Image (cartoon, rainbow, N blue to C red; front, side, top):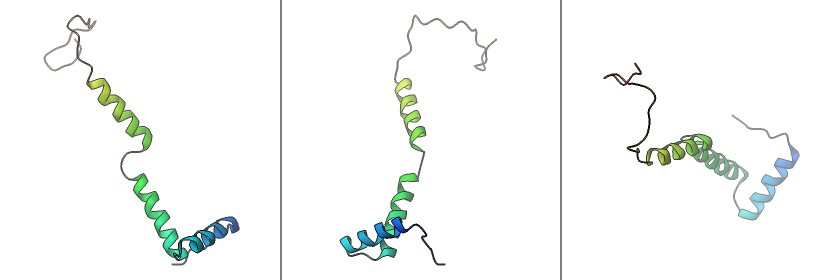
Length: 79
């Protein structure tokens, strides 16, 4: 299936990059798409930052003198 790029500015950039690198326009587009796919694999950047933050919070040791206002049952639920 053919891909048509209607934005002349994008076409000009692809042609310039092809000239500079010696790659075909198809190879350039494939490389750009591959890079973008690799960057978007896995969790999104906000989720990655959230996961890192949660990992830091998990490393904070529990304090023996901490006060928990709720009583808990044997199932880990508040009474």
